[in-house]
Every structure is written in C-alpha cells, then in structure tokens.
Length: 79
Image (tube, rainbow, N blue to C red):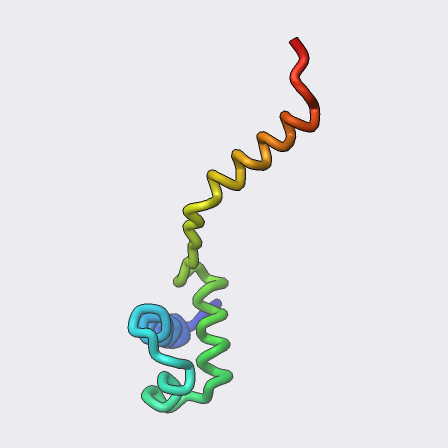
C-alpha cells in the first residue's frame, strides 16, 4: 500500500514538473530530494494515475482516412 506521504510528494513533484515546468534538478533542490527520487516519484504518479498524459494529434483523422483510402484503392472497386 502506498503511504500518504509518498502520494503527497508525488502530487507536489508532478505539479512542479508538469504545471510549472520546473526541471527535475530544480525540484530536487527546492524539495531537498535527489534527481533519481524525483524521477521515481514522477513514474509513481503516472503508474497510479495521479498524472495522465494525453496527446491530441490533429492529424490523426487525416492519417486514418489515408489508410482507409489506401485499403479501398488496393482492393479495387467492384460494381
């Protein structure tokens, strides 16, 4: 089971890293933690869904359509 302290630290580190744009070294200095500890806390936050990263690809629909068109064109049109 995860300790409340670990969760609190993971949230604090995640906010500094993802929202404030601080580097792991800067966070380590500020919180008196090593850079590897910061890295582990960020990984923990991702694994526990404290942090969710999503990528919105504006071209994904275009790529899907291109793939579908290629599929249709290789099969040919039969009437």
